[in-house]
Length: 184
Picture 1 (cartoon, rainbow, N blue to C red):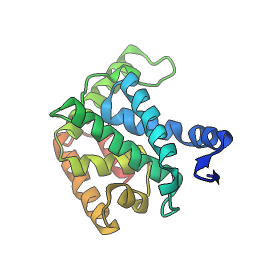
Picture 2: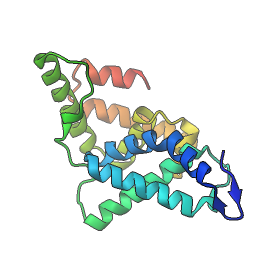
Picture 3: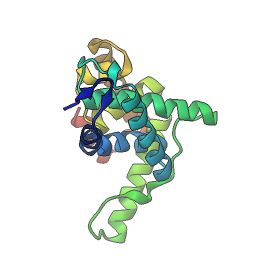
């Protein structure tokens, strides 16, 4: 998939890299920043950095895993630059995807998402990161370990503890959180 001519990628390779992975990278970043334009900018920066450092890709992990690691670093650099105290800014739940839901269903989904985001926001960064990678981005344990620079055992431990903490933070509410945790 990644073809290097010297140290440069061909235009077709760059396009394929972007087409195949941009949605997953954007979703990951958006879940962290909760702002559409910022997520778009950081996604663009992620691909720029990836293409610039393509010679550092060593097939140790999948291309997507490598890109998510770059995306994580780009996003955290953004937070450091902005000197944000919190890693998440909640309250932008207007992006709920649904096909003409009733106002009641839409309100319930917004409330559930707000509570989930708030619960994640109160958690330790390690727990939040592992849950986002495993549950939102559906990364494998091995991919998550690579992205976070952890062992697979640490990923499993942090995931279990993180899900338990998430359940407590969410006040043990039945429904959305239980379904989210059951998919662990």
